[in-house]
Image 1 (tube, rainbow, N blue to C red):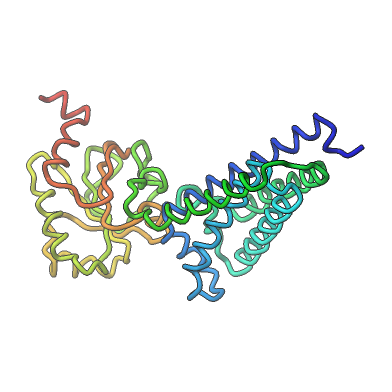
Image 2: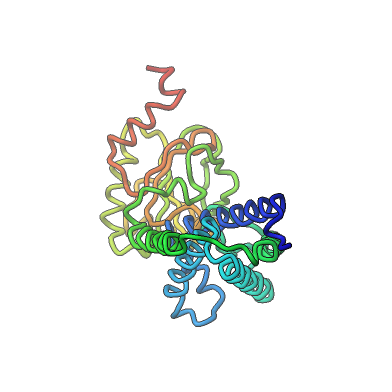
Length: 311
């Protein structure tokens, strides 16, 4: 009698496969919505960095196809084994990352959620053990409608490719970055900001880079926001280091104080730059994935409790 004939074992095996599939789908979605960050994370390993874009796209699509295959029980022998091989690859690359000092930059869930390499290895090992169990239990199980299951899995892969390709047009910044309403700012240290406490009162914050080819025009638009009467405090944060602060103030005539935030803290906060957000007593209340109009910022500031009370 095969193990797959045991209803309890078969159910447990399928539940394990579905859980692993959902983890893979969530991880792939996070990376598909911010492929640029995933490419940067792959480049950090310095293994054929010129192939990082191809590797990023390939991994996203493969993860989705295998996850869909697990969901619909496609090829009970082949798909779990391929997924196990992918997990072994992830474990190996994580160990390599530890050896070269990459720390928490695993890229498993894009920029939304970072874990230490030890936790990544533990989680992947648990999923690997679960898939081995599922493979043993379901080894002799026969499935029907293979063409339909295969079509579904390949369709999910195609959908992943489309999401990756059109990700810049998808308004998902609050979903795939660590900068979203409700987040606290005190975990993002800045340098060069004197006389302002971003963890109290209300501040409109511009996050941008001095490498922006249209920086002059964008600083003008930031100035227009900063000079609105309702905007009591506007602050710029650059991701390029404190050595650029003086030039930024004089060369571009920024009408607001500018500080620097370390790239390792800044990168999880955006997909593209500039990004604008409002801090109210250290908590993010509003975000924009591009420069908003002064009118939109004034409206958002007016929605905050202390401004409503004074109206």
